[in-house]
Length: 307
Figure 1 (cartoon, rainbow, N blue to C red):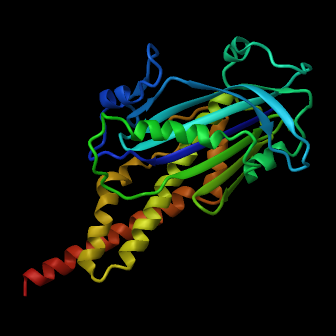
Figure 2: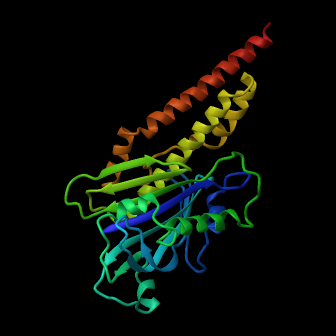
């Protein structure tokens, strides 16, 4: 089986972080369904699933189109009151049917797309990660719609503390590669896109989706911190450099907590990413650089007052 997904990550456009009660109200995307909320180890809230019916082709590098029908599952999350995400995924399953059934059939199987008439080719995962054609399955548009809906909420008090662009993590998982540990390929692409291919392990879909959201959140944090450090290095003086780093200290540094909500075999995927490219090593290097800047600034300010 092949599972496809995309996660869009950004900073919630509000002046202060939302507490869990506010986050729960923000994420009430489906009337009558509850929002998942947790306080430990990091404030986190997830909306109910939002279903989007699709009847379209799958991307394929061979040019052979495969029609899929079903309901894509999507939801929104908020981490630490600041990091907003929209996530969409779909499992691709072959079927012998050649026609579309009533929509009630597909809505009863959220997150499952049935391939009609032709089985998906072996090139499905790489073709999806490369972007496919404009008229094929677009999970990114569904994920972006969730984020846009949350960012446009009347509950938010405008005035974001940090200017940060969204990032997109497009992921695919192949669970039919036989037994053995999961193999991971993570790439940083142009225009804020990241791609992740997981293969070789039969991981549950919900666990894979949670894993990819966690990777996307921490990749976004790392990307924003790199940008803030770069901008501080271009500041005209030490005081200006420190001013450009203060938002990172106030709003971002405490949010770094990789794999905090993950369990089971998906932890091995994080371990692979910590080995290469080494998310936490790069994060800790940047944090030390920020602290060094603050230390030097404090010493300089103290020396100026004692002259």
